[in-house]
Image (cartoon, rainbow, N blue to C red; front, side, top):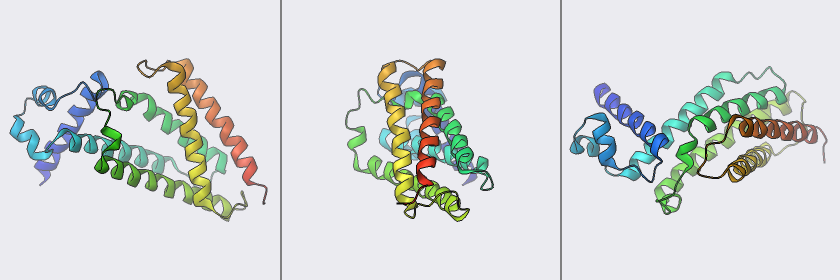
Length: 203
């Protein structure tokens, strides 16, 4: 089992490298098998098709993201500092895995029920974690809003909106330069400051 798990992780590692360099749409299962010097039957034993391999990659990236955010999470810090820390982690992953966002050549990818279900599950996990962050802040008297799940959803969607704007301004096929990433990070932190201040006022 340990050997099998290791081989599966090696395949995911290879897929991530190939996806980042060439994009998901331009990568085939044959490419990945050749990169790793494994037989196609061996590759398909772990991942019956490209869709399941993509799901494996998505799970890996999100799990690594959550692990690092939770590692850096310090509930004793002020809410604004906690959120600033998550922004830094988020944008590090955004930069590292940017090419995984390119879906040209596979227009049905995000319409696939299995992938949509996996993304929704991961999104819910992220929302639950941030709801807990806001709940902790409420318990410390930093904010007064009761519906922390709704607050978490609004906050995360706001961050995603700024991220999308960065992609649109840069051009979806171009890698954002350091200036664009710094601009996005600054906007997200400014948004966070305004957001937290607003939560200090009860309705």
